[in-house]
Image (cartoon, rainbow, N blue to C red; front, top):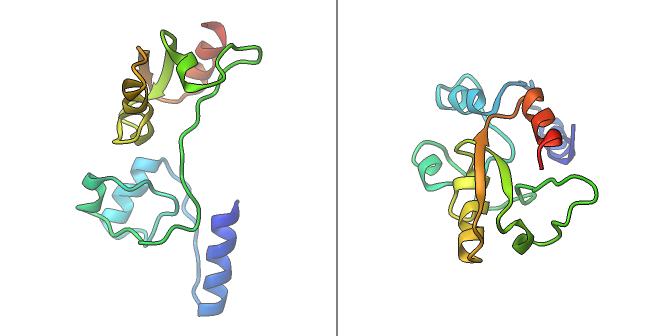
Length: 132
């Protein structure tokens, strides 16, 4: 499952905790945490809005980041190469709209981003493959 679960399992074993993993969409997990149906979520990006509802640790085990995916053979190699391109993003995702999200980052670099928003579905992935 990854390094975060390995570390959590190690701590749980030493402390005598029982860990039950819950697999659900991210926003469902946030609601479950808010209503105390679960106790914690690993790797949640800090935002001021989230900090009003949730407690965040002051130390990070790993950094959390968003990524840009391009097809093989693409001429996109650095952020400036996104200038004028259409980019698929997740609606309201912190890596797009957040203080240090790609929208703000490209604005600072004075790139014009022709973006369209979507939710991540298999159909969305196929659409990205068909369109340049």
